[in-house]
Image (cartoon, rainbow, N blue to C red; front, side, top):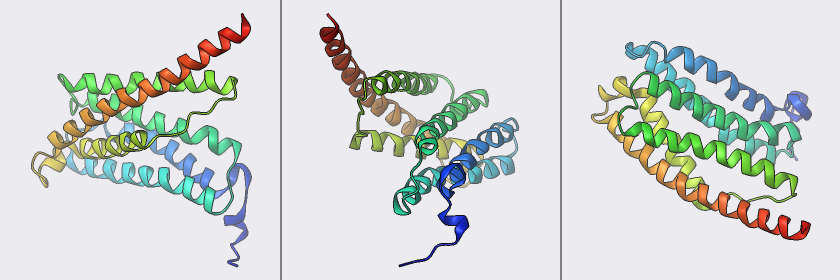
Length: 203
């Protein structure tokens, strides 16, 4: 049996998985600050490095929490919040820098609206003690979204290394938006069914 150092075995709000989640939240103002200077290629590369580190923690915090039995209430609450804050802040900044522009803004709007819809539905369903499992399509959506944002954070700097980098990001953003509509409907449909059942029991 592997003996872990006390700092790693620590549970509660200062466990390693929670520290990774806090780090992902702290990366948000750093990314916003960096993207205020969109014309400097070196800033874009730094922003990409920060984003990749934040995206990696999204995987690691859950994996470590399960592997080391360090699940916590604060982790379950903050992990999805951190993900949504990161995605929403980046979409807003990428529109601000005009990396996302024209019709592609509608893809960003769809993703933002879905995040708000799902958050509201999850809160409602939690009151009913109902959980909606994450589907395989939802995981595909998350993957497409993470990749799209990575390409778009690199933006014009990435175009100098990978031709059509920004266009690839926009295409993947539309794919993520399409999957977002599909998974959003799943959540909405589940919410409607439970609302109807709740009203029927109350009548």
